[in-house]
Image (cartoon, rainbow, N blue to C red):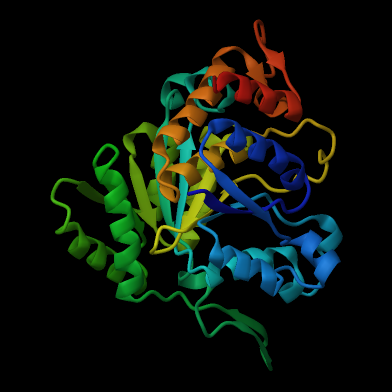
Length: 357
C-alpha cells in the first residue's frame, strides 16, 4: 500500500523547499501517494480564505500532512480572522492535533552554531511535548471591553483533566522509548489550573512506573534549558508555556533552519512542518535551509507512517552531509570555516539525496 500524504507547500520558502522534500521522500523507496492543496496566504489569494474546505477535507482523508510555512507581510493588514495563520489554527482544530512534538536536536558538527558553549549542547536531543488545542489560546471568554475606566483585555486559561491526561500519556509513551524521563512544566504555585495539571500528570504517571517524573515551574524550566539543557529528555507542558519554551529550546541549536516539528491526534495522524517561518526576505533566492522540512518528513515517517527505518535513513543522511562540511548560510559559523562549503537550497537537497545511498 502507498502512504497517502497531503502536501501543503504554503508561502515563501515553504513553497520553495517543499518540492525538494518530495524528491527526498521519493528517493527513499516506500510508495507514496502525494496530493497537493493550498493553505495560508496563497489560499487567500486563490480562494479568498486561508483554509479552503477542500483542503481540510483532503487533510482528514490523508495518512499524514506535510506542511511548509504560511504567512507573509502582504497579508498582515487583513482582518484577524482572514490572516494566513488562521488556516494553521483551523487545520489543527479540524484534525484535533492536540499533541505538538518539538525536538531540539543539535548534530555534533553544528555545536559551534549555538550561542552556548559547545560542550553544553553537542549531541543535544530533547523533546518538548506541547498541548496544542487548549489552554489560554482557546479558552473562553476572551476579548476586549470598553467601559468608563478605559479598555480592558481578558483571556481565560482553562484545562480539563481529560485534556491534561491525554497529553501526559503522549509524553510518557515517548519517554518510555527514549531515555525514560519526563519533566512536567507548570506554574502550580500561582495558577490553580496548573495545580490541576500537576495533579493529573502525577495520576497518569502511576501507569508508567518505568518512567521517571519531575516537575518544574516554568520560570525555572526556562533557566535550566539555558543552564544545562542536556539534563532534559521529554518536557511536557501546556499550550502557552510550550510555545515559549520550545522557541527557547530551538535557539539552543543555533538555527531554526534545522528544527522539525509534528502535531498528532489520538489516531496517530499528524501534520509535520518546520519550525521556521516563511522568511520572505530570502524566498526565491535559493539560499533557504531545507533540512528542517526534510527532518519533518523523517518525523512523519516515524510517527504516522510506521516507517522507522526510512526515517533513520533520512536522519543519517543529514548527519552525513553535515559531517562532510556542507552548510547553508544560516548554519555557517561566522568565524573560522576551514573545510566547510556553503550550499544553496537545491544543492543541499541534492547532497541529502546522494547521502541516502
